[in-house]
Length: 580
Image 1 (cartoon, rainbow, N blue to C red):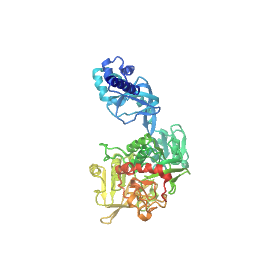
Image 2 (image 1 turned 135 degrees about the horizontal axis):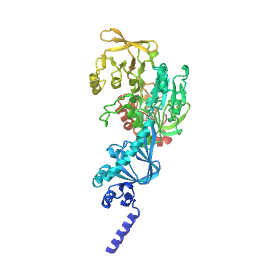
Image 3 (image 1 turned 90 degrees about the vertical axis):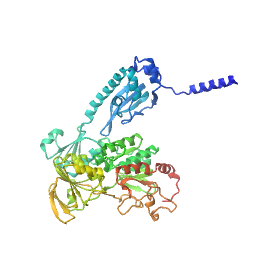
Image 4 (image 1 turned 30 degrees about the vertical axis):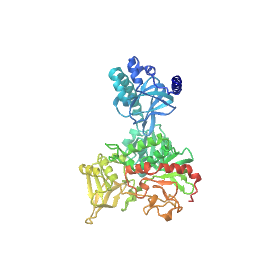
């Protein structure tokens, strides 16, 4: 009996051993030059505290921004890269036997680089506290760590110094609508560029190389390779910059329309559920939130983050999880019967689920001569690019919400004077308290209450405003160098299917807000954020009743659009019997 039990235990042990995952040994670690000459007891200690990991070809080993660790490359090679201007740039290739992850570990900060397996690799991961504890007994390890880190830092600096230079020069006229549209597109897609005012001869020699295009060809763009585009469409511009403008397939499980905070979040969660996901954006990722110079009440960022930073992080996450993103494309038509979508240019995409996250557009100012000066001194919304061009100027902003407050603070770092025009008697209940407090302490920001713009004036560009005081009915003309409007959102629903139910302002109704007589079948009830068309969902600012805040938009895109329902819809639609 005892002998039989002993044999069984031996057989079990041998079976387990035959399936045992190979783990990093002290011999593996000793083969790394960084650990050469390390005492065997320390190698044994390290052997017991490191993780043995294997990665396939092109698999990400470390993502930029992830917690730092020290890695030992046991087999294969990895590529270090860094994203600049929305593009991934290769920094160095690290071969077997070397340490990596050292840049973040040496400074105890999140990894500033991304490391990707080249043809497959095997690595040993050592937690930073473990490595520093080991270095107490073997101080030479710190020298090896800093040596590897400094080499990568130098390589990164040399590379980023070159790629961070402007990638294009825009030649045109200040306050020219077409020029403003192109510069906004470049800026929002995180593409650095210089601007040359064609009216200022002295500036042209500084950036533009060669002869200038004729006046009727402006605005023109000259790229670092010398190529020049004259009066390009946004799609032509995006194609030349090698941004993705064409869907890779004509069939998807889920298509997200709009790449603002809500759309990016929806893309992340749809892709993480294993759905083949396409995100379509007509301009650039980030939406209106990208124009915010500083979002200070977003959870997890105690010092705030810019709209650009939020958009960039969201874009990286969408791509990492496998969703596809195309820019400079718009949806012109949706067929509610089979969920086919027609894009501008004639591209047709079929999908099983649609998430509408396009946001709204700025409400138009009702005042005399406004349309004449849009793009020539009057701008709906504003971003950091607009603020940086207002040096030593007096600009006026209209609005009482957070967008207006954030913009006013951004302009105040450049402009001589910023005047915020508010129609009501107070900002309380419309603007967050932290913004109100900062506006009150800014010495070059003046807030005028009970003011409405009734007319605008100028010749080649905007020069003055007529302001009406709603308290006493008086009017006055004031000079200005620019008018920026933050008047709330409206939605253009003309391109949406006729059977998609919207409210009186064009915002989309969802869930229980949809009248029963507008549902396609009495026995069907839409999900919480599902529209009156089965399989079409809605989130963010375009949804009727939504809270116009970045955090709520992200929440709707990620959690309130139920991805489990989406997944079930995507995989069962072919067998659905619901009558549309």
